[in-house]
Structure formats: structure tokens, C-alpha cells
Image 1 (cartoon, rainbow, N blue to C red):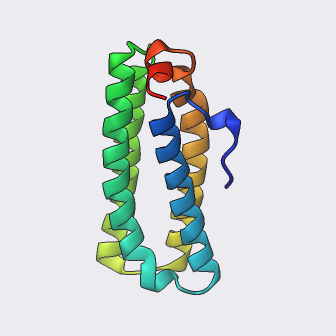
Image 2: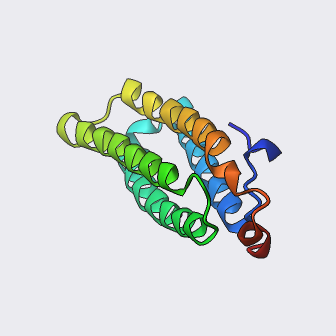
Length: 134
């Protein structure tokens, strides 16, 4: 999945973090295509978990400070994503690596990011705080 301006929030820090999540998913997809999924899946789950927790905290704080009208919806969506990620982590811990699960995770990340960013995160565009953060 490639970054485009339609994903821009107007906040450089958040946009940079979004780009890194896109890159993480793309790198993992490449690892799957190259047959290295079993070697990197556990690390991907751990890295993704840590990174999105940090990112969600930054983004939620920004929306709160900007009095963004979708701040609560954003936080709820983040909780849902973390729950979804926890399901993948639990499945991996209990059953080990399965390529179908790994591909499902990458597709889930892509779909969730596009939907979430385009529906919620872009609502930061034009806010004074987003402009000041650049």
C-alpha cells in the first residue's frame, strides 16, 4: 500500500508515523512473498503492538488538544484495533505461525489503515493544532 495525500492529516508527526506503519506492513508483505514469514511474524506482531501503542497515544493527545470532534470515536477505534491485534497475537502464541494468518494480518492492517485514516484521522486537517505541529 502506498502513501498518498488523501491520507494526510496536516500534522507532520502523525503523517510520518502513519507512513511508518504503512512501511511496516509493506516490509512484512515482502517478507511473506520471499518465504521469510515464519522468521519474522512474531517480531512483526511485537513491533506493531509497540509502535501503534505509541502512535495511538500521540494521535489521541493531538486530537484531544485540538478538541477534534472525532476524538472519542478515534480512541474507540484504536481500542478495537488493539483488540484485533491481540487476537492475532493470541492465535500465534497458541498455534504458531500460519501463512494464511500472516497474510490476513497484513490485509487487515491495510484495510484498517485506509478506512480509519480516511474516515477519522483526516479530520485533523485544517485545525490550528495540526498546522502548529508542522
